[in-house]
Amino acid sequence: MRIGIDISQVAYSKTGVANYVRQLVKHLLSIDTTNQYILFYSSLRQPFSLSDLNLQPQSNVSLKKYKMPPRLLDLVWNKLHIMPIEKFIGDVDVFISSDWTQPPTTKAKQATILYDLIVYKFPEETDATIVATHKRRLQWVKKECSMIFCISESTKQDAMKLLGIEEDRLRVIYPGI
Image (cartoon, rainbow, N blue to C red; front, side, top):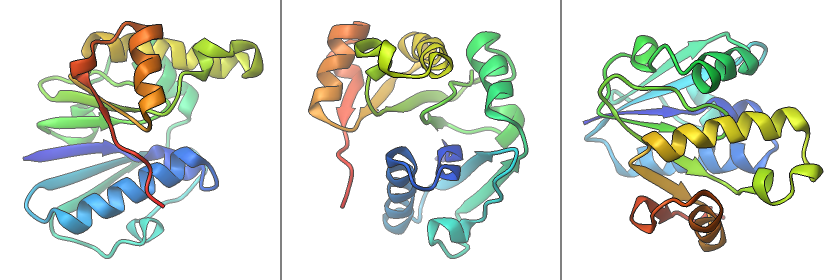
């Protein structure tokens, strides 16, 4: 199986989202040497290599890096919802998106990681651009993702209550220590 994962959030190295993505990928790759992993990374200013994940090169892992600003990807993927991820990383069976953008896919099943729903619960406490971006992204998540990984039972409950997502599409994967 070919699995694509958006790891762009690791550019924000001191955030909880970056730590979650970094550890998830690191541990997933340490236990699975059978599947092929294509890691998608986009940042205009932050360079990145597999060593940033504390990974040694592996034959089942490739990294696709692009220099695009997050606002451009928000426009292309969250607003216009064009340019499938396969145009960037090639054919994959599954694509796992992360915090900021929700690209369309051509054939791949889609999954995403849901950290919290602060933009719905406390929009006045969050920058308006972040609120708008996440609300656009979450509309596509609701429509297109077969699986949504929640970082807590509370986030899972919020997804059901605030977004109306069915429980069978939600799985809790707690952050590691």
